[in-house]
Image (cartoon, rainbow, N blue to C red; front, side, top):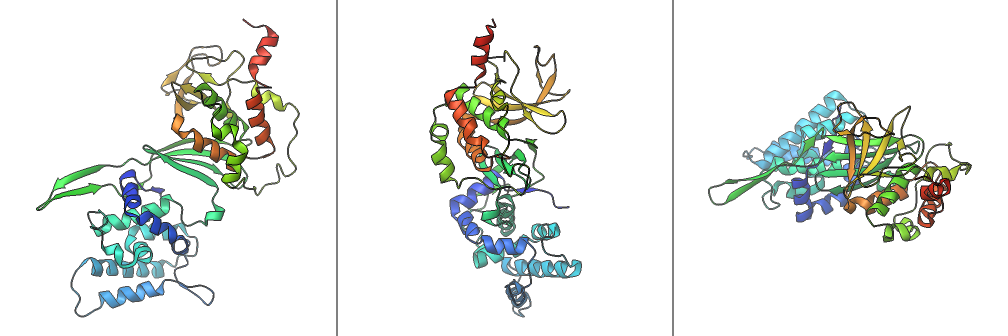
Length: 380
C-alpha cells in the first residue's frame, strides 16, 4: 500500500529557488500521465516508450562507462521490467510505489538531461535530486488535473496545511509535518551541503466535519475578532475574495441540492468561542464530526487551536462545561494562517453554500451574537 509522501522544507525550498519547481509544474500533464499509470501509448494517446528506448541506447552502448547517466538508464530499464512483470493497471497506487523505487524515470521524463546536472541545482547527488522531484510531484498531487483539485493548500513553518472537500462535500482539515534536516560536511575543495529530500508517512493531525462547514467558518471569523482582525480585507471584502479564487465547487451529492431550511439558523451564532481570556457564559462553539465526536476551537495567546477530548491529552480544564476533562491538540493556526484558512473555507464551503454569505454578513453585523442574548437574559 502506498505510504503518503511529502516534500520536506529543505528540498522544497531548493526546488523553488532554482526554478525547478516551476519547470515541474509546467509538466503537470506528463507527471499526471505517469502517476495515472498510462506508461504505454496507444492509438489515442502518447506514452513513454521513447524514454525506455533512450535508456536502452545509453545502457547497451558498447562504449558505455559507469556514470550517472548509465546508472539512471539502468534504473529506468528496471522500472520497465517491474512494470511489465507486475502488470499494473491505470490508476494503480503501485505505480506511485514504482516511481518512488526508481525516481530516475519520472525525473528524466520531466527534466530530461538536466536531471543529471544535480550539482548545478544544489543537490548532493543524482539520487537526491530525483527523490526531491518525485516527492514534490506527490506532495503537490500532480496526478490530478488542476480543475479537479478540491483542496486549499499552503505551507507555514514546519506544517503543510490542507482544507479539503470530499465528494460528498464533507470537510477535512489537516496539517502534515514537512520539517527536514540540513547539514554540511567539509569536502576536499568546499563544504558539501546535504538535506532531506523525501518524507514518507509524515506525522499529521487534523479534524473532519461530516455534515456542515458552518461552525468551522464561524470559529475562524470569531478567531479573527479575538485577535483584532475582524475588519481585515479577507472578511470585509469577502465577495471580491471569493470571486478572485474562483467561487465555489459543486459537490456530487444531493443532500443540499435545493438548499437547507433557515429555521433556527441564528442559533449557530449563540455558542461562543472559548479563549484563555474569556470563558463562554452560555456554551462553547464546537465543530461536530460523526457520533459524539466534536472539536473545540480555543484561542491560546494569538493562536487558534482545536481540541479533542482525550484522556492522555495535555490540556485539562475545570469549568462547568468540561468538568476536568482532558484534551489533546489536533490543529493549530497562527494569525499568518488566517487569510488561507478563510480562503480555503470560502472556496469549498459545503454543504449548503447559501449559508456562506448569511454567516459572514451575520458575523459582520453582529445581529445574532450571543452577547445580545446574554444582555436580554440579564445574566451576571
